[in-house]
Length: 455
Ligand SMILES: Cc1ncc(COP(=O)(O)O)c(C=O)c1O
Image 1 (tube, rainbow, N blue to C red):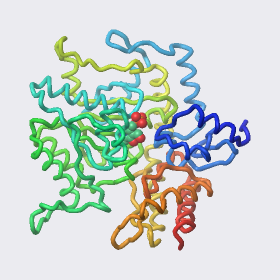
Image 2: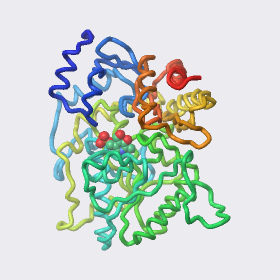
Image 3: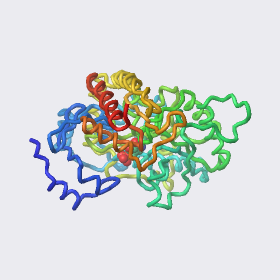
Image 4: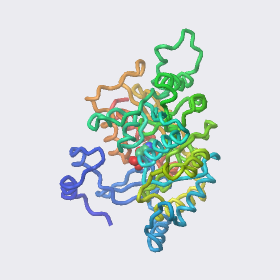
């Protein structure tokens, strides 16, 4: 049963709990989430909110799935934990890796498990360096990411992240991580050195920034390119259709690995099992987390192509892949993931994410006529509305006006909860969100924009 709202509870929170991105002022009116059902979350006052971000992009099958609780309890009773280090294994981990080999990219058949997204990306970076070292190319160490990329907040993942606000208080960043511009269709500017009469599309220009960076750095020093198929936390940036195929070709031309961060796009979010298949290409390594367990247990991992798997397996003793986490292949996490994949398959949720996403985007398009709605974008069930001070110039609002946070407050008053990137409103609800809830989300956002910015 819900407890009545209590400020005493929030005082205890303030006294003892440090939150991600801690800001005490944010805690005074914080929601203490107490239960969830489907696409709805309930806070300490008993108020219901549409969970417009699926928790943190992860609760893809929705809240309150007893089946996942049962899978966890069953596994905990049988075997709560055992090491998965070389020389040991467990049945849920074996079954999950095998299952992933049937739904992942055709060239990716082997998997390593972690506890979340940042650990997965760390694993991907280290594996890329390991691979090149074994090929006799130990100087190939640099990782090229992109502006607006979000890859987690451990030291290397933070260094790969291309949202600068994550860096300053933790400098120096890990050396060897650099960034190119995001393809960002709404804001992309042709490079200053573009030749006169340049006939390349915007997507080709954006991809060619990678080639330029590799040339600048020296191909012999670059290990990999890292990117989310659709940039998520950076504001749901959907690239041009010709971007990724060209990126793949550039990686091949310069002999660098393609790392796909599919922590958000993996397991159906874009309307396909994995995000790059829409573009007809495959990565060398993919990172995943979030949707694999719908957040019911912290689990992530990487999948690697055959030649990388072979390198790991064939490494001589003195060059062993010395990479490990206590919780790698956690039997409970793997059991929950298997039950979660059962739900996704049984209920046809990948296709549903595509259908509900199309409905959401159609709805959001109706907001485009508002004088401060600069851009509406999305792919599958991830979408964003970017608010601007001036549609003509695309100028942003002055940060002091706090437009994003005021819109966020207005949507909460109307019963919807998400996370913003500045003045970009991100939407990525669970795949089971009903049509009525999708329509209501559009209505709430439209009303909130008018309440804050006028008609
Ligand atoms: C694309 C992407 N990569 C990595 C991460 C980091 O995952 P975690 O917070 O589980 O470390 C996130 C988290 O939002 C993410 O969206």
